[in-house]
Length: 192
Image (cartoon, rainbow, N blue to C red; front, side, top):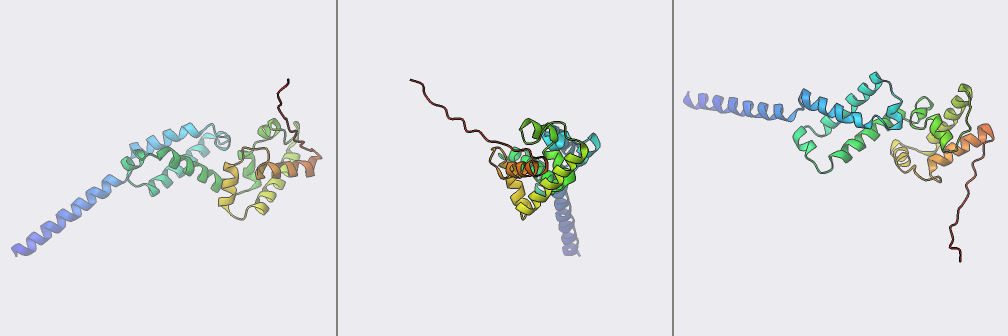
């Protein structure tokens, strides 16, 4: 009887200890809220800046839940050397998942005023012309990239005028509006 009582006591202690450990691994409400608040720093990103407040809260919830699933121990997560990189990757991955090269969403990551400023589109386009451009652009993106990873990498490397994304934008602008983007090579020299 003493042996059974001892076994039951040890089992209860073990279950209690495991339950206590699992309680500590889950993020608490304050930690989740802290993560959501830290995601406010991303609000100025082009796609996120275009979201209304309710959509942005939904977006931060998606990122926070995904981070919690990948890193169940909050203290370990926030003390990691690459914590900012992990959050950056999760934010961009969530954006890419939402975009999915759809014409309704491409305007968020490549807004019209940005395309005008970079010289891809002319100013003064009407709604129908913009819809036609984004339909063309999304179609070319879908035809060019066979999976999300390729599209994700193209978005991250879209900082040069010769990038794939910029070339696709220019192709659509040229096809739809006879708007030709001319690249001028500037050569600097030393005068003697």
